[in-house]
Amino acid sequence: MIDYSNPQSLDWSRVQTAMDAAVHPDTRLLVVEGTFALLPALRSLARWGICVDAPADLRLARKTLRKIGEGADPEISLRGYLAHGRTGHTQHVVPIQSKADLTLDGSCTTDDLVREVVNALSSVLDLSLPATASGLCSPAGEQPHSRT
Image (cartoon, rainbow, N blue to C red; front, top):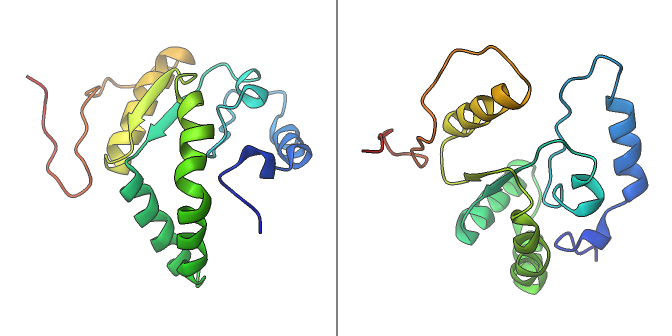
């Protein structure tokens, strides 16, 4: 059984090959996404890093629904979570979250998360983008609110 909660389960040569294939002379932005994208081996290559932090119950519910949507038996994921997921997150993910330049609330809507990333990246990449509200987040299913 592969323990996907442990970075040793990654095939680093495949990661490097995929990154090399994605980079071209005119590449301004390369997004490397994944649970371990902030590990030193990858973070040292990055100019900027983002962490999407979500509560454990939300992470588990999303993964279970994703597996069901893929036609996979969710029991395998649930057993893996119980056997390795909780401790793996604490051992391998929590310590690298502080390496991010921006940490986002994973309980927010996708639209809110994208808006936050675009706002942050516009200054990092020197983009001329229309100003949008920053720091606003409405957890999925809730109405947007502003900070006062």
